[in-house]
Image 1 (cartoon, rainbow, N blue to C red):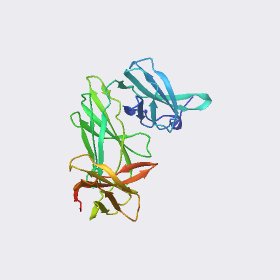
Image 2: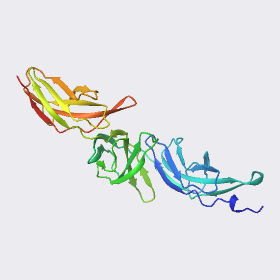
Image 3: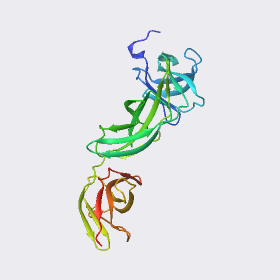
Image 4: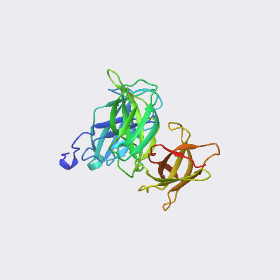
Length: 293
């Protein structure tokens, strides 16, 4: 049978990216093969043989997540593009195998995260495993998985996303990578931390009244759903929430201090509610209030 141009697959479905996810699954992304109406995902423990079909996908798909891996070690993947022609006949074109190493490297642990519209979103992490570099992942709340936005050296444990914009809810995670002579070893992805890039709340005025009552007035922060006032007996101490308001017309937070206190340090922050969860913006600098007796 003679095949015309319409019955051909014009290019190979080469694998663009392959990564180990935080739950131990493997995400494979490949180049769309023009003319294909079906993709077959194959996997093997050997680069040259024993490839077994693990998924059949439509011609519009270019991503697959393999969640059926149980053992550690090296795996090879390849994608085969298929196109149906007359009388049930199919033509096919496959790509070269691409490897990934499933290892037991300890996942990094994200810790602190804060946002500032001027500086961006900053977070830090710890890692018990010594790695060659870290991959930084970011996703919006409407995305199922994060995308790599940066690569950092293995002795770096903090990052500022200066390209974050005001408004969206972002989620961040980290993955460690060890470079060997023939392959890469990936840790599982770290826990995710969410953050909004909201404006920093500004303190407009402070009122001190008899009875050691403090009223702090805040400037309206665009996009915020409420405000929290934090208090500490030391400037660099632990700040505990003492007052909260979700009013959009009044930004006065008051707190009646204990009898023996002569003053205290305060910070304030705005927050936004999404699906019943509270996400805070950056806190103000600490300010001291001396009580009136």
